Length: 194
Image 1: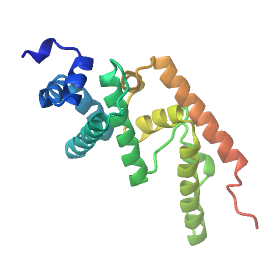
Image 2 (image 1 turned 90 degrees about the vertical axis):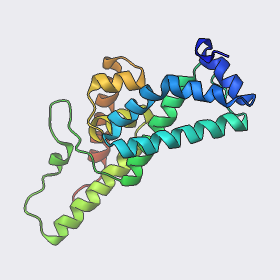
Image 3 (image 1 turned 180 degrees about the vertical axis):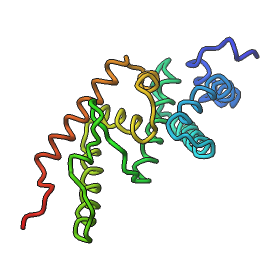
């Protein structure tokens, strides 16, 4: 049986019906694109392999449980799973991104850090923690672009390709994310009261 001539939807149905070769062909067909998209985000071969495997474990579990309903959209569905796993990884790592506005100003520089005393270091640490919390309050699309740009250091073209939107849409989401962060920073009292 030549599975290469089957579309993704037929291969999913074959796998759900118990034919392991359906999943093998889907994996052969899409592994490179999915793995590459993960690697571009995490820039670490072993981590990319781990996340790729986790993504396919989720795919297998979803298919086996009968919860798959993305008719004819297998690849975008798997890519979304993989991207969500990457974002979850960055959240767990709690890395502090360098966030620059469109005019190249680091958002952290708005906070004016100088030679720090112990109190100032505590304040800075709290501010970074607050900023991370604010990032998580952003709408998912804005947060995704922000994480891809500043955690994974992707270009806007790469972000547009991975999220399947135009470059202008990706740029717009970043602009809104930075604008929303600025509003949140201004509304939150960042300087302790005397």
